Amino acid sequence: MSEQGKKIALITGANRGIGFETARQLGQQEIKVLLGARNEEKGKEAAENLQKEGLDVEFILLDVDNANTHQSAAKSIEEKFGKLDILINNAGIYLDESENGAPIPASRTSLDIFRKTFETNFFNTIAVTQQFVPLIKKSNAGRIVFLSSGLGSLGLHSDPNSEIYNWKVPAYDVSKTALNGYVVHLAYELKDTPIKVNTAHPGSVVTDMNANGQIPVEEGAKTSVALATLPADGYTGKFIYLNNELPW
Picture 1 (cartoon, rainbow, N blue to C red):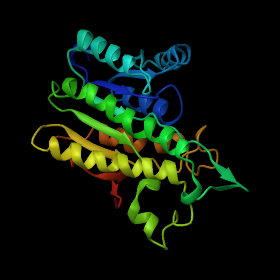
Picture 2: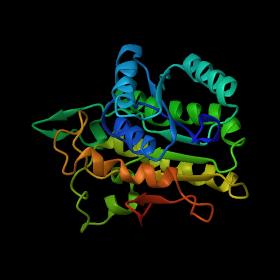
Picture 3: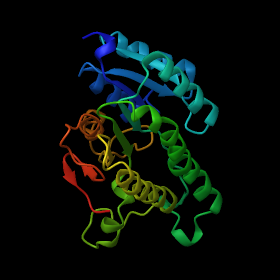
Picture 4: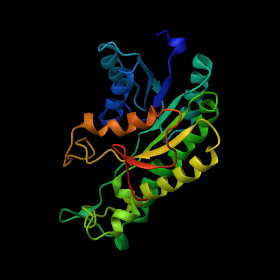
């Protein structure tokens, strides 16, 4: 397939972990992948590793916490491709604040931790999305995917029978809850367009951010990839894990 006829996907925070594996799996589907990373050296190295596998992947400088890179990346994509088919908001942070091996509870989680977590996981993720929506509207089948977490589900956190009921990391969890809320509103705004907007729970994946994960990164990337490649009659405004809908 010529590059002109390919779908163009942009993934934030894609030089490692779930983002890197998502780039690999999309590339294996003959999709042109723009591997977003804030560190040029690491981003280029990651892209080169996927190129060695025969995948059409290239590095693009994109730091979720730097608005100038949002603008420069959008300008570059518009000039090269004229559109963006897939945006995967994969980048995020988990700031550890614990004592005796357990997360510090909500009443004592510092405002600094809340603010820093929300800045990346919520506000700046929205900023990236707003920067690229105009380019996604130029696609005939735009897809926007937000990497959330089951830890952002109010339903699961409120259910004593849920496996996450007794595991609460306030700043991270609530930032993902807020992000889920944004997804609902953006999906509603775009419901009469071909664009599908959904949020993904990857599962408890073994990554640098989660050394105690339970599933490999290859499994963790599957939900993002599935949402990025939904058919025209696919759903929008859903919270999904491996084709199963989760409670908000």
